[in-house]
Image 1 (cartoon, rainbow, N blue to C red):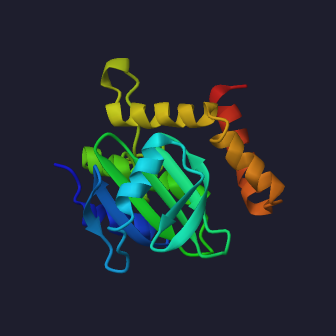
Image 2: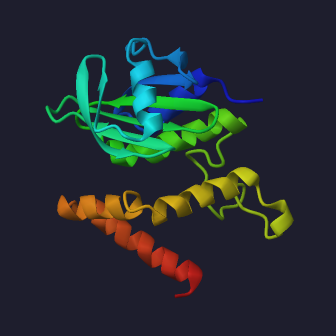
Image 3: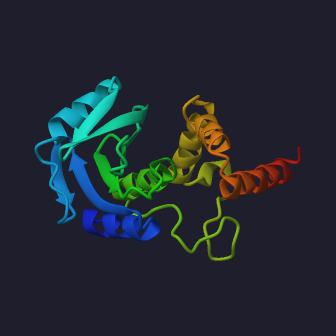
Length: 201
């Protein structure tokens, strides 16, 4: 049984407190929205621009956002006037569109938003906020190829696509390097070291 949109949105906003408004869509129909955001007048244009993957900018609630990333599964856009940002993710069934306050980082939040879309589809996210990969009682993939959780496999395949995409992982890394963001660069260095250890390279 799928997780209900209200719970999915609550979990998302807990994961990233900079996300202050969210709408969940099926097709172009809003099936849930936080009380502080009415995007009903913008949904049709927004979705059309996104689906066409040709958007240079999107307008939501009277604010124009410049698109940084527009792909089949995700969209990231920021207000050049410092009025916050928009991030959105979708699958074949649902779309989740979020507004982040000016201090928020839509490029960082997009992964949480994609996980939220996945939780709507399957009923349970493959990891909750307290789980650790490989931890006892946490989320551990079976060693048998026949028993791999299809959602977990889908997440890894999405991650692989994100790595291959020039606007994906390399785009994020270049962005934070250009910003000279020491905390993020430090975390990336640790992740790189961990991946090398996992694969023995």
